[in-house]
Amino acid sequence: MGVLPLEFAEGDSGAAYGFTGEEELAFEGLDDLSVGTNPVTLRIRRNEGTDTTAGLRLRIFSRQELAYLRHGGILPYVVRRTLTL
Image (tube, rainbow, N blue to C red):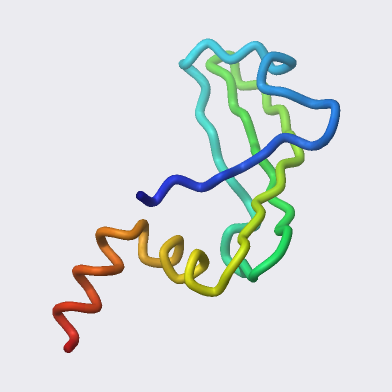
């Protein structure tokens, strides 16, 4: 439904970053996605102004899944397809 299935690198986890829910998150590397494993960088900006980055991967298994992600999820994809027919 438009959720990116991002995974931390092997041996890394969200617990290592001490998330509080007040961070600003930015994802880099989402512009040129393809079927397969795509590297993505997570930039974490904390309230006190410090930045941390984490390496993530986004695995896309099919062209159809890629189309869903590009449209923001299955429902927006179906609506757009229906309106253009």
